[in-house]
Image (cartoon, rainbow, N blue to C red; front, side, top):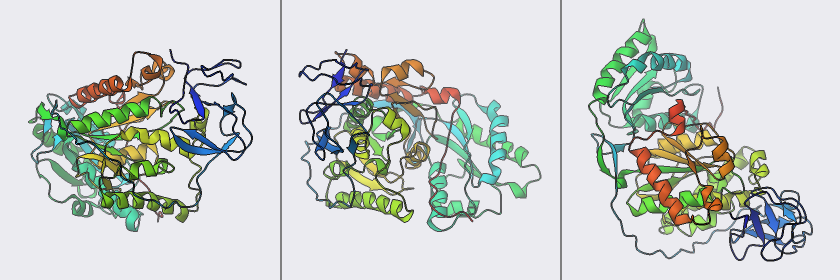
Amino acid sequence: MKQYIRINDSDNVAVALVGLEKGFTLNDGTILNEDIDLGHKIALKDIKEGEPIIKYDNLIGYATCDIKRGDHVHTHNIRTSLGADDEYVYEPVKFKDLKIEEDFFEGYLRKDGSAGVRNEIWIIPTVGCVNSIVKKMEEKAKDLVSGSLEDIIAFNHPYGCSQMGDDQENTRQILADLIRHPNAGAVLVVGLGCENSNIDEIKKHMGQYDEERVRFMICQEHEDEIAYGLELLKELSEYVKSFERQRLSADKLVIGLKCGGSDGLSGISANPTVGRFSDILISKGGTTILTEVPEMFGAEQLLMNRAADEEVFEKTVNLINNFKNYFRKNGQTIYENPSPGNKKGGISTLEDKSNGCVQKSGSAKVMDVLEYGDFVKTKGLNLLSAPGNDLVASTALAAAGAHIVLFTTGRGTPFASPVPTVKISSNTPLYEKKKNWIDFNAGELVDDEDMDLDKMGHKLYELVIATASGKKVKAEEEGYHDLAIFKQGVTL
């Protein structure tokens, strides 16, 4: 079993893959001056105060004091290198021509030509005032689940009224995006009647829709809104049961890429595994979406250089700068991102976190950049504007059209999103402890001498194809389904 790793030959730190005791000697002769926890960094040379700390072949901060070879390198002796805005220059990476190799999964073909990996009825409230009503409808309608109708799910949220401007429009757009999502065989949209984001307003954001597939009800217009809603759900259930799984091309798959509760192994095992998966799916003609913009800060130039052309490069620059301006507008520090859990797991600075985070994007071209609420339209790797918050970012990925979200974690979390959310552990102890949360153990990449990134990526690809073909993830088995919208404005 590997005990530590130097990720790149240019790095002046290594990362412990297991807990290492004081006095342990690395292969290069470095002797540990103190105990080093799993995921934490070790100085491989003497580093003077003010000198750079290099990991992933990139700058992740500067030493705040003299650091001796064999010392623990962490928040007590490293500071961020980030500060004023950067000037970005497009230095495009050269890519080999991509040869598409067809593959297949068993999914649901919708009337508009899109594909779904689930055949569910979604109940979507236009406003938080009817949350209890839609949950009661969900509970009473579960008896309708049979045949190819896989589930009936109500998605609660607290918004839809007392909002203004772009904040209100974002809520309307996210709800409209979810209504059109192909994992929902049918949708019941439930309004109160007096809210700002009422059904007529939501329809403006939906465009054309299939009246067999989407039904609407306004609670204030019915004496018994539960009974009326159940009548509509019964009608929708018959429509949904007309769909059956069939063999579809993997080029129809859209997969969201997200991490949270990261640790020092996330950028070494789980995130590179997802990156390799992304490259494999794109080689089959499929699409992936990377989000959580604040966790690109410090690694954004890597993504910019992979832009397909100058236009995509400029869109990526705007993606980064607009999010920095969002922080400033709200009087918040841009670069103090790592959470207490991140730090406990070995992540020291935002650059440390970001360089690990962007590993999920693999090595493909960045084909397009999406604004929050945009629905994906370009195959290949896309970037999406959304914050790092796990629930908000994962909902944004679903609203952008992701059929499945891949979520890497070093600390563990039970949450879900509107679509199947595959939990991927960065380390084996987490996988062994939380098998009711974790679907896939990327810790094998550091535990098993015979496992390599290509094998690990293909193993994850096989799990995704199985999930797209109907295999339930742990969160689905537990009945977890979450929705969170990006709140950006005042509340009236």
